[in-house]
Image 1 (cartoon, rainbow, N blue to C red):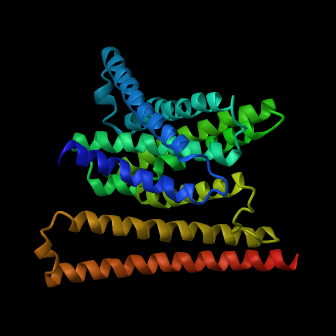
Image 2: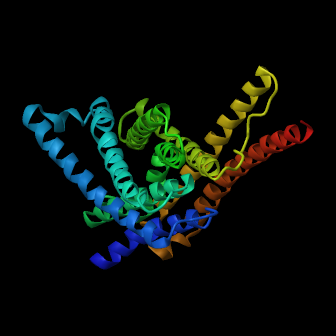
Image 3: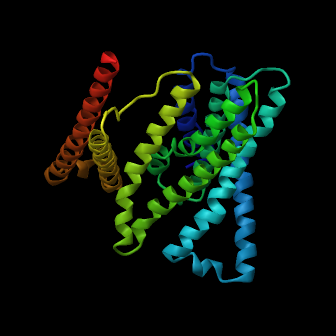
Length: 324
């Protein structure tokens, strides 16, 4: 695969996702500004890669760091103290420095800052895609599916930063909220990496992998909620019970949505990984076709049940809001 073709595969999916959110902002910034944040985010990805490489060399010169991180505990520690802080720190720098420059000429909306944050995170994703594909360490499908993940990580501090910058009275508590939200992003970034890697370890650690896609589904829901909040829209309410018993039941239903919906996506993902290496002519074999239809049907049913539960909770919230 040529370098230009690799670059197109790395850049186009993040740009399409950025366009998806650009169209949903009521007063979006100039497209050129978004592209600048996208490029700066990609540059921050190379900076993060260099810092991580330097830390690895320094750690290996002191202890046998390469051997330590082969264990689940060592790998988890690396995600918490190196990968998460470095990558989220570089993305934060890629957003905060250009915003300070733009503040001289514009009064930035909270939604604009939030979209700038998403643009930088997607630029970071494009850089990461190119590095993985250039070295042949990840299939194209996996990286395309993971396109929105970095955007989901940065959503908390992107929202907190947007609220702080747009506010006429910048209070210390709002500034401390940015740091708290950034720590939240670091923790969840590390947790997603840990869950995605847990498959390679023996049971019961490998069972943690089934938590990955439900967790990602919740992160995507949280991103959507932050997007609504920065635009002044009402949040989508799923828990609307008046009593503690009703709220507990509704929380259990939300957990079912995440389990069914997340693992439906996981099932389709595993199916594609199984089928994609096969020659096209083999896919039309009766045995392979039956496997495909069976897996699609099972995962569609799981996803449909999750959607029905979601609609049930939304209808309950609508009715209670209407009768208030």
